[in-house]
Amino acid sequence: MDPPLTSKRRSLAEAIREQVHDGDAVALGLALESGIPFAAVHEIIRQRRKDLTLIGPISDMAFDQLIAAGTVAKVIAAWVGNVAGGSGYGFRRAYEQGQPRRIVMEDHSNFTVGLALKAAAMGLPFLPTFTGIGGDIVRGHPRIRPIEDPFGGAGLLAVGALKPDVAIVHVQRTDASGNAHLWGNLGLTVEAAYAARRTIVVCEEIVPDDVIRSDPNRTMIPGFLVTAVVEEPGGALPSSVQGYWRRDFETFLRYHQLSKTAPGYQSWLKEWVLDLPDRPAYLRHMGDAAVQRLRVSDRRLAAAANFAP
Amino acid sequence: MIASYTRKELMVVAAAREIRDGEVVFVGMRLPLLGFGLAKATHAPTAVGLFENGVIRDRPAEAFIYTMGDPPNIVGAIACLGLNDVMSLLQQGRVDVGFIGGAEIDPYGNLNTTRTSGSGSMVRLPGSGGGGDIASLAGRTVLIMEHEPRRFRERVDYITSPGHFPGRRQGGPATLITTLGVFDLSRGQVRAVSLHPGVTPAQVREATGFAIAVDDSVPATTPPSTDELAYIRHADPEGFWTRERREGE
Image 1 (tube, rainbow over the protein chains, first blue to last red):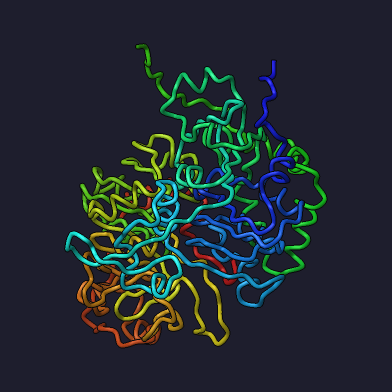
Image 2: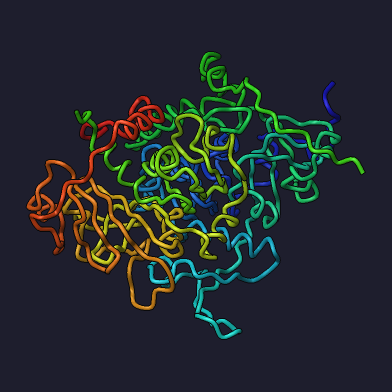
């Protein structure tokens, strides 16, 4: 029997319509190469959002797709490209030639993006760090300024807080209230969910809340921070989800080749985003053999932890 | 008999040899993913690897990985934390050696992976990723580069990952591994330590856009052993990271 539909459960299209607005600062791709919410990325493109600010550490292909679709005005990130192939050609066309529109880039290192989100997550105006000293990223940076150590130590840098309007994260399972179990590498998922004004949790499966309560240390995002819960199995493909999906490497490589030219990108966009209504249609378009090849069917279960009082 | 090997395989071996047993390693993207596994499987069995996505592991990945986030790099890890956790360990001085790649380098080991006008028109590169952090905060860094004149420049257009500079608090570039050889950077200048078999000093000078210390007495890079090659071919069975690529591939 399906768990009851509560007030937070939404289809992906509903969640994007309600929570991601033109001009919003959207954090996604926070776990780095895994758990990238590509289904949400494609839905944002289908709903023709514009003037978004994208926030993330690295962004494996997702930012490139959003930028090339013309949805983005500004990027706050440490790295924008395609980990398999290097360059993000959509990003390059926008940055170098203003095609399909000009974008503003706020360059960071991974740690300064992390500290900016962490500061917001902690309710602080900034966090100090030694990273970046001697390099050009921090020179004249709008969010990074030199400060003195009030305790008399060496000078350091203050990284200003960064508060996304909305964070979109992909997790393995959540209950209907959005209490989210996530395992594997976390990247900046937790900081972003804590910092953001709204958080959309996309999950492989919605489970009864006693599953979540059986292992509270695995709850990375408490549900009261979550504004929408979306069950979308395979919603992170072609990125991996530990225990559910392998990385679909070929798709990253194929996009890298296709997106070298604007018409190539447009053909990808039409076939894989605009001509498909939703993620189930995307999975059908991949074909059953491809989906089965990527689906994890083995089990490597964690040992049980006894929480008996 | 020395088995045949590719230039990339030799670079992986050179990277692995930079890791000493017992060290804490900040493992970067691409070749170092393989180099860390090779070091673990051969001369550095007790090394510990930190990955910027939050993974800490003390065994090579269980199967081939394209990225540090691939499932075989998570299973069997000793911890899966967040980016700020491993970056904090780096900042605290708990990392002995970190690996970084670059598109351009200058004689001080400054790396540019942000933007360049070196070829005339401006080209936007992907950016720092964790490179700037590793360069700033690791005990020492090992840089990995394609050795081409347009990449070895007197001045880089943008310093993404700082090299040696006055007032540096800790660390700095120690070794540069290129497609032509292995170079020492620890004293703030580029000095050849070994050239890959078949590479001449003239070739290196020609491929370097600034003055570089390399003379005829520089030895050849020790080729991969059969054990090292066996590990690489087991961990990268299709040669994704290590086969020679055709132009444009």
